[in-house]
Length: 93
Image 1 (cartoon, rainbow, N blue to C red):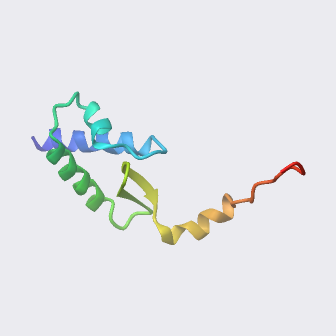
Image 2 (cartoon, one colour; image 1 turned 120 degrees about the horizontal axis):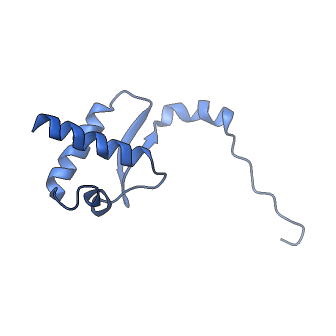
């Protein structure tokens, strides 16, 4: 079971790291063809969140589901390579 759990967690990580938007529990259940209960899935996601503690990215639960995001303390550095520019409006606007 330990190997199976480790594999399931790696599949969840791969799915969450490969998408820009949050994934709901129902989205994540599709990965396993509904074989995991919502409670088991929540427990595994909490385990993953704990395992990523102290890394540059974190797993968070948001209103629409679960997603990885960069920790806030690293955003000033990232803004240096990807600065936000205000939108340019045409004269008509």
